[in-house]
Image 1 (tube, rainbow, N blue to C red):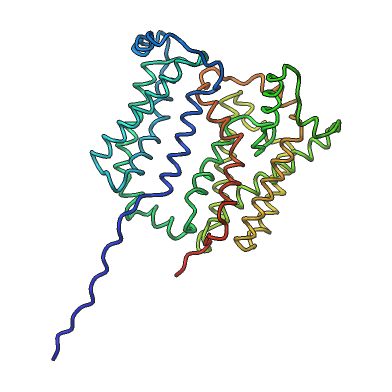
Image 2: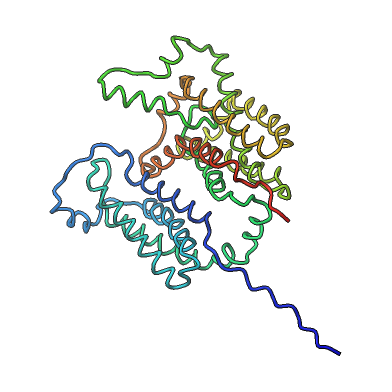
Length: 383
């Protein structure tokens, strides 16, 4: 009788860093820089000798809202730093290093604000931001086993998503947040021509309207405004949801995930409208044109959901490009301009810059992700 030798056990899979965490960290750093230095104008050379005195000075007026906002704003940064450092740094070393990096980032943001007349360098902001980074680092270490190791979330990502979906996940996660900044049309992101017109007007000291030049004197009637809003809403919504469907594996509950993403975007839009304007304005954006656009988007998504993934990617690109074309050519609704005058911006100034950044550039981020190396993608995982 011969002894049977048991087959060698498979070695455990090596621990790897998370590309999703790295992409998220880069995106969040962009948001922090934009929110901290917005509006990037009026740079001046102040007395550098007085910088240390200004930094040490405690602000005369502050609110608990400012304190909580600064803390909460840096909590995701601390968490993402821990996730990016994994598996090279763990536990207390990850907390210490992530907190140190958060302190350096906060100090850099506050120092540069000294040269912006519209911003205030504050010791309180530095301390609260650093505290938020520390809290985020601790939470990141506690959540690492759940998210980065053998947790349920990692398993779901492996089962539901295509192999190279990290960038798309980050961009889709930012889509609901892009609804925060007030827009003339629902899902009407990427309206750059008005900003470019203002820049050119300031440069040449004259009034410039690039959209009017491209329209060549064509004025829109009320019905055409309504139709344009319908097209912008339908194409913007369809492009974003198709991007979601494109990265999901065939085993994923695509309909539920897409519905959850759309519900999150509409919920954020309603809460932001109620907070920035008045509670009665929470659904002021749900105009007849927007309702028609949502209905048409639902019909298109139902049909496009049966298309192959590579077709969904191309349709997503097409929908986003159509939305960009219309949102930049169609003038803002006069009713929206009047409503915007009631916007309460004061205590949200730090947040407005990041929100506007997302609103303007989200479709370009999405197009970049959809168009990069499409031939090397694998929409479904091998068995």
